[in-house]
Image (cartoon, rainbow, N blue to C red):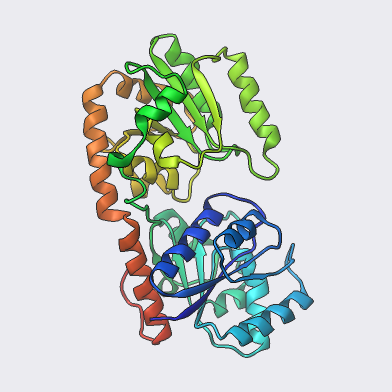
Length: 380
């Protein structure tokens, strides 16, 4: 088992990738594996790492070519004697690969690919970068395929490992459903439809607003929660969505909660979870909602297909179709029996396939084989 790992995430934003980096380090620390963090100075992930007392390395890099930072990081890698370097962002390779080459290091280099790319990266420079990668983890089948289509990585270097969810934290039996509903003045007979995520184009906020407007014309006992905040550069989009809500006259029925640190509790206040994302590499919020036993309506695309099962845990709708989204939500609004059935099936599915401890076990076994130079011939 490795004793010392470096995690790299030089993003200046704050979203799923950055949160997963932090939670990944936490899991490894719990297992006694010392894991340091390489990040951009002053970024949100830097702040979060500092709060948790992580040993942090910083690199002030924007773009691709930073000779001084390459030298600095090469020296630190050599000094700290890491057994594995695991980057969570492919752009970090432009710093890490030259640094490793500079000191002639054969440390295993792992890339977790969390976001798909439409850019084909098979030119000479990218080929050299990807040659240095020891193994790549894809968080969903669509990402695995994307890597094969857009890079020079071969199938034997790509392994599928879904994100996990902490079932101690996301436990319906421990939720504060009643408290949250009282906070928002939600009655016992109200049906709450909610979505959770950054205010980012492509998350489906427009379709959610459309559905709220249409459904409120048919039902008087609906409430809608929009949970989340804009990240860097997303304030204009957030303002656009709030203006759309005002245009649709949703005041009183729709609430923007902003950022909530009590994610399990805010999810538990919902009766139906909406996941209208146009394109999602995985869908962490969806898995968390399923863990809380909330039935869902999801777009039928990309990483969602690894998670939700149509007619069992969820109703899937045609991606970007506000009309189909509305129709599928209406099915669950009209059927408390299906809401209960889907919720129970969701809990069961998450426990079998996405439980955090099981996924961490798989990752540590993966690391162990890398360190011991044992071929990895099976799926994680």
